Image (cartoon, rainbow, N blue to C red; front, side, top):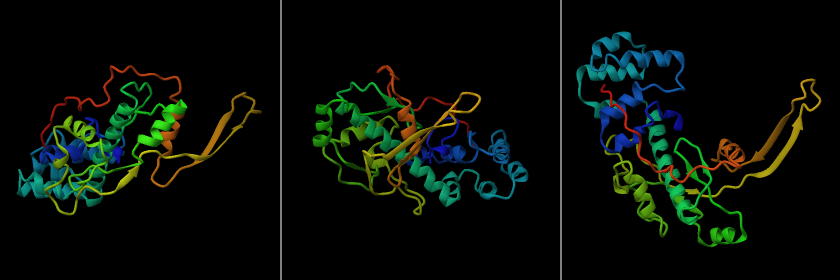
Length: 269
């Protein structure tokens, strides 16, 4: 999902909710992305300098959903709203999922900061910015977590009407950094793309850790540590690896993990 975030760091779903359809379409079709394959990168490069010159763009593009969208814009030059709806449905779903997950991650991070009384020292680098990790080093902190913490939190959406007690203000503050409110976390068009509903566990446990050294007798003298563990469905092993290597890393509190997106030049299609 977060692989859909391009060079600007802007989330397509944010612009979609704001009905900035032209900007959302530009990011989806033309913005550079480090994950692009060579041909995909080339196709995007055709659009950037010739945005708006749809006939010229169409002549240079391969047959694809991108070319179909350009063909539509050739006949409807400023109808970016319906042009965005022509993006492949699976990709549109990924864009909205990424936006929703970004907000959820920042929301949990803000709640953890409150749990730690704004004294969080350990933060996890991620596509959602620096995420707070709970301080559970003492028995008192562990007991507070068990007695006060919300085990599950709903996915942010205007379709969600019931929120765990004491969490909505933090969510509103996260969404406000994007120039939105929780009630605006919805898509007015098209009907086949929408924010998902459901809950996510806040705390996931990695189980059955197994580790051993391999290659200790190699002539080079180097060896590898092979680690294995099990996670519940939907959890990401990469997040465990990152936390393992965070020991001893401290990030100053002056780095605000809820900063707004940086300013970028907003190229036009």
